[in-house]
Length: 290
Length: 232
Image 1 (cartoon, each protein chain N blue to C red):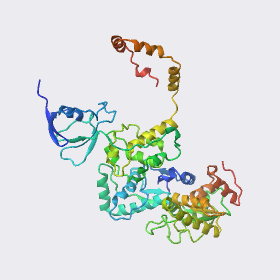
Image 2 (cartoon, rainbow over the protein chains, first blue to last red):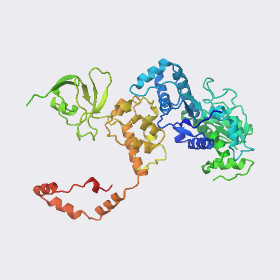
Image 3 (cartoon, rainbow over the protein chains, first blue to last red):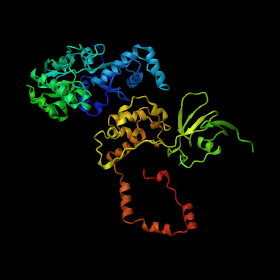
Image 4 (tube, rainbow over the protein chains, first blue to last red):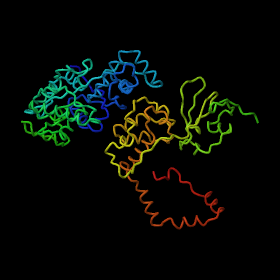
């Protein structure tokens, strides 16, 4: 295993606002494992959506600026947590790192600023844990195994698609299941794990995103899950909306996968209601926990 | 006395010979322009005299305050003394800073593509784009701190391809930050109480009754508070 002292980390806007618990729990996990997340000193929005128009380099500039910040820190790799940010940053990096002409064009537009040299790669916390930290090391750090907890691992779209930038098989991903298994929970496979939650349709077609997200929750419940684990603030938001507004009964709890890992590693969950309920659901009694 | 050394500049496209070493504002007045609006403190603080110019042989447009920037040979320039940018209406005490009110009142910030053109237009060298990005994530304190030197000239908003109203948003953030996060200064509270209690009424009445000569004498003999004696 390669020794890692800490990793350059891009939070993204949601993690500083609506998805605070995603960041707090992930930081707790990585501190506990001895690989702290080192936040970029300056960062801007990732760009939110990767532009699919070939010549639309303007909409890649936001991501490139973040890669420049990582470069200024001396980091060769940047880790994201939010699936949307990951997807956007990763696809921009893949394109700009390999297309010198595009890179020149963007550098010339940025003009009197630091050039991007094209050497920063983008990863997600899940593939960092799987490929470099290893599940064994996570397992060794567990103080409260989440035994008896059925967790449906929900990937949504942007973590695994398109194939070239996904962190796992786009049809049958297993990385999140391995993550929750390493902390003692029981991963629950369900057919909607890579279905779309409705995404930004929540803004103008709320009915549509509620319906889609409700189907995800129902499928997870039917498969026997008590909890749905997510990796995206927008999926999380839409599933929570479906939980409270949809026709749901006994809907599973929805949490970021990092919250589950952190709870197993001793985090107190900042006293949130879902974390208390999760600990109550586990077979093992809650020990310690400040 | 020697004739002053002259240089040629172009004001709104028309050539003028002006003495070397003048600011843009002084050079324009030398050339015969009279500022009825678009000039204020003449010291780089009020933000009334935004200027856009291009140096000879360059392609870039540059931005400055006319009262601060010196003329150069072959400079093309014009004044942008006012930005007709709309400002949001809000009642400060009724806002909840824990919500992202900046985004609610200035939703155009969500259109920022991080081009950084605003930063390059700022005559105060403020990291304008960085504070817009901080606003997107609801970090009022960071917006207030980064924008502290803003003088509201509006050049950032004049250049923005996303039509963001940076300077108005930044002002809102500084106000929010000061009412929600900054401590209430105790000396201000005390002074307001003194004023209400009429502590200074007699002194003020005396000044009101004083004739012009008396006022001048009083002004000339006043004690100027040294920095070392200041409240800090």
